Length: 340
Image (tube, rainbow, N blue to C red; front, top):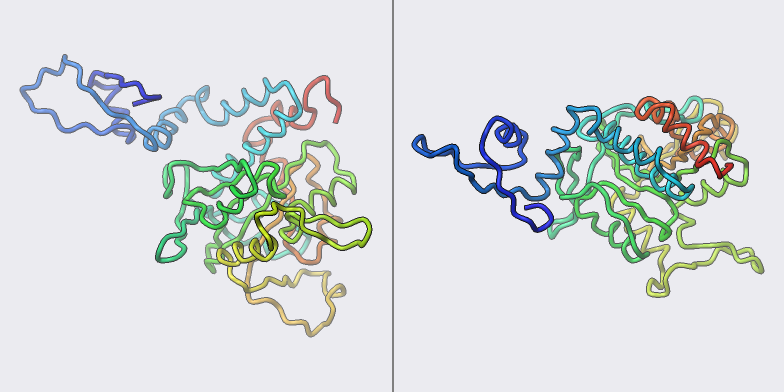
């Protein structure tokens, strides 16, 4: 069943291949059955979504990389390039951390001396039920949902996702929360959950204003708030329906990550600590990993200045390696009529 239409396929070599991949299930036919007849086969989601990919990946022109590349190269506006770049990051993370663990340093630049690069993490999905929260590994072919991402259409949607992601590993908050992309990682050694917050910037170079704006957008303390020009105080600008949205938001994140804190002992950072005797946190990883994704990924000094240690940039070489120079340049340049 595809799009509400019933299709008939004839059992044979190609059909058997689809069955092997898990697309459809057929009962064993009796020996005396006439194999020249047509037998109805029911094909439904999520099997179709999950397992057709296995078949498509066997040919370069039908792979997900090629599909994303075609969409990116044919994009006719800067906003379209930006939206596709956000999706591209999701695919990169799914391919790198879905169904397996890998060191963070493969995809991210950290401040020099940071211990986070060596941490091995895996992509996970969260589901909340009557017995509490459960965490499951997720990949292209495994998981606990029929989808890998959810796009919020309102602030209520974004907050509802955090209350119960329902097994979907990725959230696209759109304009209803700070980051462009949110997902969950689990440290392989400690089992700690990390909320990964990503801000994508389609710019060849990040000036100071853009850098600070990007940082604020992936700071949970600044979600749904702004600074009042008159008083200088930070005030809520979130939906009126959420009377105390900041405390509610913190509670939602705490339910996922716990309350323990992460205070890194980064080489060269001790002089910025309030006290040489300051105790380190109990977590080996931060509750939030804040990532800025941009072609301008070499931000050594700016990363070094972030003493909380939970800031990183996406390695641009990962985008180039996966999608090639043409796509990478399209993200840098936008369209011929737009100069970034």
